[in-house]
Length: 198
Length: 98
Image (cartoon, rainbow over all chains, first blue to last red; front, side, top):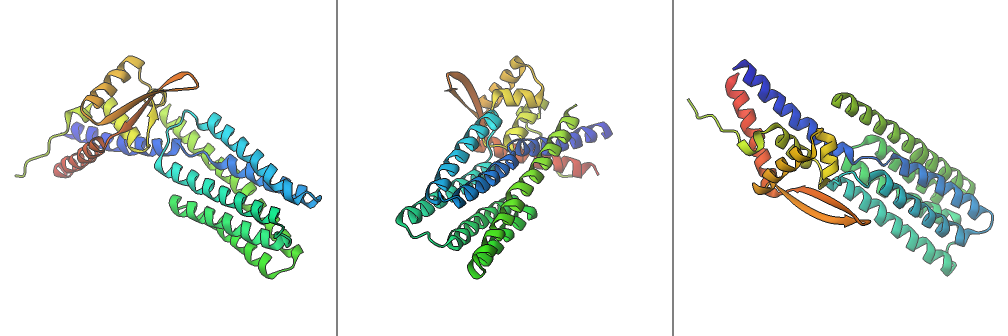
């Protein structure tokens, strides 16, 4: 009976391990944060040189293409999960909303105050980060949402300079630093998985 | 003495149990990914997946992506319920042995 019990316990452990394994396999998003963080910086500084109307749409389209190609190459053979699809859908919907809103405002000539752009963009990024953090129950990502919302408030009430600084700091913390942190975590999960499979 | 539950023989095979557990955590998965995760041979994996398909626990979809054939497996509601029942039965058996 003792051997049977061990076998049954092993089976339960195997089930738990493999269910978790399947879920973790689809999680590889860290690099997209870094790509988009770099894209925001490029667009922001390019716009600062007097190409405000074109800098953002062109950079955002380029970043979208890089992301699509990267996801296809990186995760093309990975299984899809419902949570992964929900997260992808959240970012995709937010990206499209930002693209339509800022292009419409920009080409209509209503985007004269950079603080309006920063406040709206940071609020939308905060919304997407908060939604994903709730799906993943990930406090670090909720911290990113708080940083974006802080940039929204600073841009709304502060000077242009304060708004710009807040936006650049939020990009650094929530895209570059958070992206690298997520990549480190993903790398650790992969190492643990390989060690467990060895 | 209460009757002990029987373990579903279709799920009880170790490879089939591993396959269902992997599919439980994902929406759908490719044959090659399942082979990589289980370390099984093509023949054995195909045979076990066919048994699961015949039991109605997994659904298979074959398609072409960039002219390459791709076989995708998805767990059905029946398979999900069967694995849940199997886990409950395992826990009950373990509980009765303590």
